Length: 245
Image (cartoon, rainbow, N blue to C red; front, side):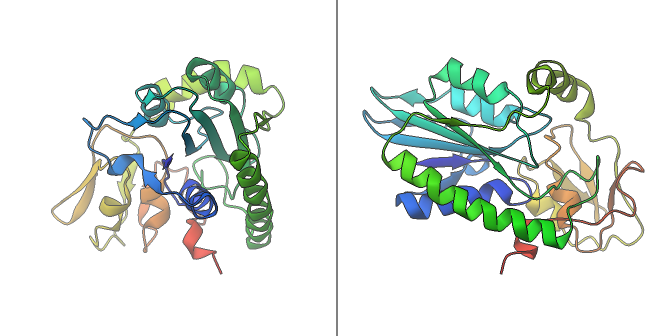
């Protein structure tokens, strides 16, 4: 079984591509009831696919992985999707849970609070490279090879130890979210939020406190009406399906 968390589609795509090749099912963890108890049988294989947020897995996925009942000799692997580097937090999580294999897959940038999206040429190049990498991952998972192919990046350890906790504590806030006059109240943001933290009030989106900064709401808005303070104004939007051929 493969479990994934995704905002703009990068991790979802990787999870589903892996699932097809491994002849299993890919399940979004946000589609599961909170009380669901996951049991993994003896000798089975289970994978976890998620985006890297500020050099660490999203808290929602890290907590999910820790609360699974694993069987004897369960083979566990995980894949972190990132723009270019994943830091060292995946390694720390792997040691805590006993995950045997880990990978990072470079995917198009969607964090427009920080920088703009990649060029169409870069996006196409990354997707093509990811397809090749997914094939290799499948071969190694089928063989239950214990490998670690995670691009931690320059100063990855420092970033994961210092920057990631700071991001979790101070950067994840819904207060800066707001909509411009171009908002048509279509509800796409409501349906795209993986944490179900947005609702329409008087035909305009209102954000609850829960957020992982996946930016699904911003990137999926058909009118590009959602902004995060002043940081996203004038920047392009990204979600994977827009670029898939």
